[in-house]
Length: 369
Image 1: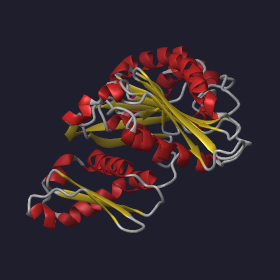
Image 2: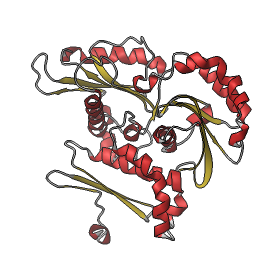
Image 3: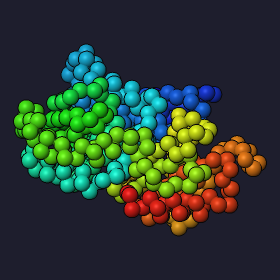
Image 4: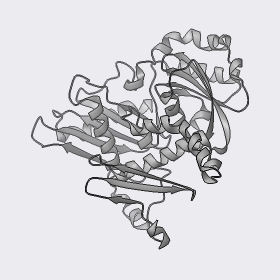
């Protein structure tokens, strides 16, 4: 605030053991985040603040936040967003909060599910329908995929953070598409952790989505739907060939704003899934902030940065720990066109083979995303 009065913009600060980042939104709300986690990057904290404000708009609306008439009433209304915001602060299995891409999974019978989804959407009278397992999108209509950021990430995340319910009728604002006028988010549980999500206006009523309509479109697909349940943490269909050294992967399609994220391969090896997620998240922030070109939709790069675009890295690797054979973890990142792949590899993987392994894996994954 002192700097602002002197027309100096200050967005972050560091103490010996804490990073502080703050951001003002619409000249009415200032969010401040403090992190004492070792190696925390400002990029990660900035994106966290954007997600938190997006969650507030999603459940309260921009008008209430930008033109505050009654602070006490706003505090009460914001309680609706606490559960969603808490899920950003915990050790989530999702990564869309950091990548700003939609967490997806690849179902074994995707074309069947996509066909049923389109037919159901037409019968229900809405163009915005998706199938979500544990906060990740299994399949969605074209209109759903065209949702802007951050709602494309926030809506599945919201559904995954809510307590289980057979059906919901939830008012939501779209931070990008409709921040002032609420829409209705309807959810229907097909199987535990597998929900059908509809974004619509006043119609249809939840009661109109009767058992007969659900039975017609989804009863014949009971087995393919069951096949989606293990995909939550795994993301990839069973039997998908991955090299035995791969302990985790993150594949991003930067133009479609979708990603696949899993730390399930080789579960019997060290480190733990939680540690693997931390390693990949931290490596993502490193390569995004320092090595790779700005992602589509990011603020315009500075003129001097544009001059050096031809020299921007297309691949990089990191060895965690010592480089002695059989010790430390290997992390490698590769970008080809709109796709960026990050791999976490076991200590046995030789550094001279990292790029070849990443290239082969990226070509194998390309048809999926």
